[in-house]
Image (cartoon, rainbow, N blue to C red; front, top):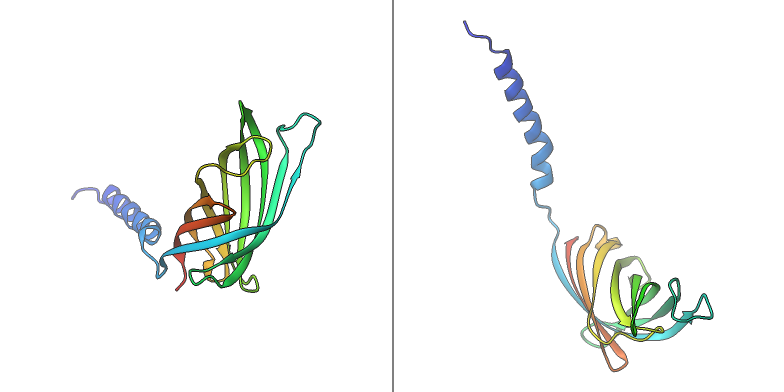
Length: 165
């Protein structure tokens, strides 16, 4: 008779790995969602931390409202960014933003580092951000957004996954 203990250990290890791995690979009921929002800054402020401006650590904050596809206001946003690197006529900023829908019970959070004109300038090319999460119907949301400035209006296009129907 052969020793069956090693075979049992292998079978046990394979069974345990299936229990641990398969739930992580399964899909959820959540699907993908495309959001397109138009936003306008109501208020924008630059805080310079040293007489030499721009400088690392300078803060640019903004807030305002955003509209849906029909042009009706559907929420408000808050953004904060910090200069993290300087180059000839350019600066790198890391930005954190929250887009609150309605009374704020539903919201998405975005974050990313992008290149801007120096001195707190507005973007001169599309920006990319990661969707880092959300609350309410956007709880667990992930994805990415592209933000483009046209005149005084920003267009934020987000592709989200993990959104509850």
